[in-house]
Amino acid sequence: MHNGSKGWYVNELKKMGVRRHEEKKLESYKKHFLANLLDKHSR
Image (cartoon, rainbow, N blue to C red; front, side, top):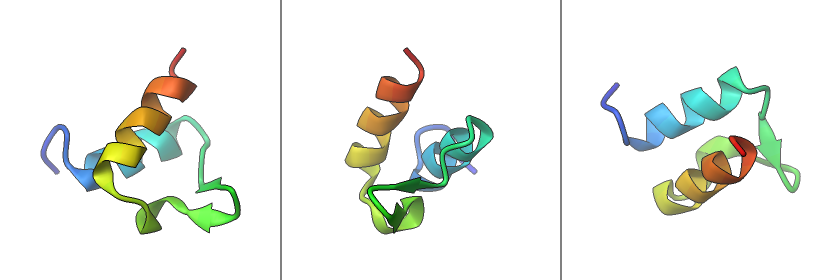
């Protein structure tokens, strides 16, 4: 997995315990949304 890829963001969020956002699986979101979500959860 490459740093900054969609799969990388999904993996990092799952490491933090985030599996879903608003009842939807993380895999269904676009990369830019996942990047913002990771930023929000890492603060």
